[in-house]
Image (tube, rainbow, N blue to C red; front, side):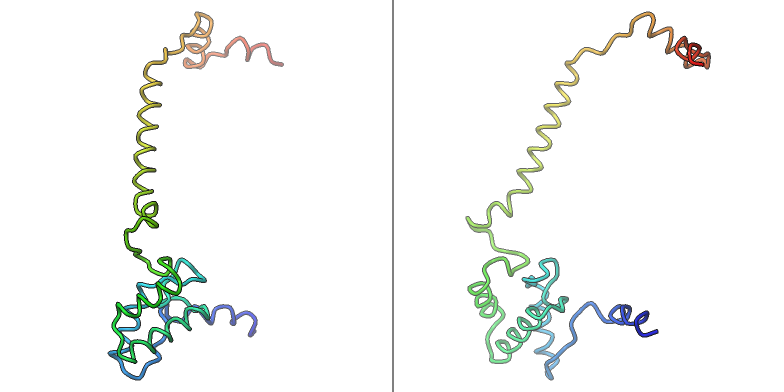
Length: 154
């Protein structure tokens, strides 16, 4: 019975990590900042949502630094210096992140350009012409009459 129920035990847990600081104001600051930081293990969750050991350690580090009186900017600077811009969900626009910010626009423009190119080329292509035999067979198929090829099959 336990093996059937155990996998569903984590479903009832909240999507956000439980508070650990005694000061609710400090914990609110920690969780607000944690929502802006990417979990380096999960990579698709913030450290506020992740249950990975590294995310727990990063939340503890944020909590410790904010508790020591550092500002959110100081904590972000520390984490960026340690882990790089990847730790931020919204990395700043720099030469090293230009492709990240401009890449989707270039892909969109390239896709629209390719589509317009193909549509113009397609409009210039002549329409295929049917022979008299092909027209007769098509008309017979549309009217429901059997075509010559269907009559020949046993």
